[in-house]
Length: 568
View 1 (cartoon, helix red, strand yellow):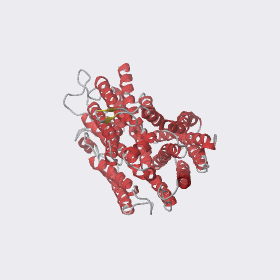
View 2 (cartoon, helix red, strand yellow; view 1 turned 180 degrees about the horizontal axis):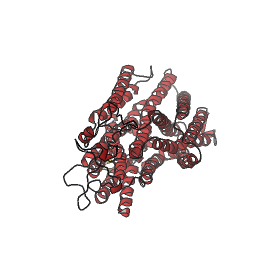
View 3 (cartoon, one colour; view 1 turned 90 degrees about the vertical axis):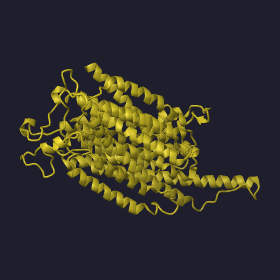
View 4 (cartoon, helix red, strand yellow; view 1 turned 30 degrees about the vertical axis):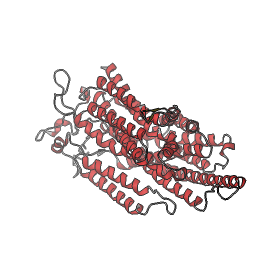
């Protein structure tokens, strides 16, 4: 049994890694994709949906499809997600225009976003409570490894020589997405032979939901959605859907009674728990997806020449905020919830998730715009530019391990505050990069390492703190909440910061006229072209450095919020 579980863990981790790689792989080839689908270099704002489309699908699908796996089983949902992931990859690889590449990336995001919570729920099915944190940590490590390796992975695959077969381009950036098809197929075969068709919880961790009219004391004061008793062969009853686990991120963990044995007006009762088992919070999932979609649409400005936001921006953003409020209202009152943390202390939890949100915003801004800076200001190819970003990613990975060691000796809050403060210092130094980056020497490397060390230090303390303020039965859903918060920070952060940055670029270049080789001699044209190029480079430099300065303020806000994290 132990060996079989290790095989399941390895397979699930590989599936999570595959999805995580594609979450970040596009930052390496964003300019190449933009050029191939007809987006000019001076209108890169139109390429933003290529990034935000994936993130939107990823975040919106994560909790809802995790719940669907509770109802229909882990293996069928993983198979469906892998098939959708392959389909999205094909759509992206075949894309000849903006709409198709965004659609393909969004489908990829929806499928990839579901794989993490389903895998974590699978761990809740198969691991006993005392062994579960190690397995959850392994899956979390696969997710973090994807963020570190994604840009380099994309740069390597983008170096595949161009090859056209039957009119279809297979090389270059297209190779990044074509290779997902056989990888998804291999993962599906591995899942089929390693993951049980129905989740089986360890006997020591199974709890029964009292049926209507049963004695609630039989559950020892705690009501949770649980697995059904296995039959004689240890399997769930054939033909019956799998129910929620007590530790998976999509678990229907229902609130116990308070210490005074006086349940809140909105706390589900044993009777409602029995009725809620197997149900899916479709309304909550739809509200969350709608809120995020409205915020992203409101922040996306296809013509930033005159304003940061588009004409429809303010009302659409206001509508997104209202829908987000409706989502919170619904989750408080619904008997079935996407992320149920009923018994968790809300203040420390929200502060910890806020730090994860702000760190995610800073992380993706760095990954996208350091890569673009290297390609535009330094003139590097995709792979060479990803090696510049590798300084940041290597420091991020090292600091993630260091943060865990420091958090054992110090308080989580102290390490998180120090990490965000260090990152703020790194981004402030990045905002002072000279125009001649090629002659900056080690300054660029130093600043990237400082920013990476700062953000990396935050990863372990945030995960540790959110587990400490939640009960053991809610560790899976709490871990998923950290990931959701970080991905939401990436989504909203890149949309907001890039909206400001692209507006600044357009305002700085609005007075420039593109020189034409007509009516002037060649020498004059070359001089005009060199002057125009220098002014565009200066505008790009101003745009990027100001965006890094904004990111520094985001990290300062993160340090302030980290002060409110729970003490050990």
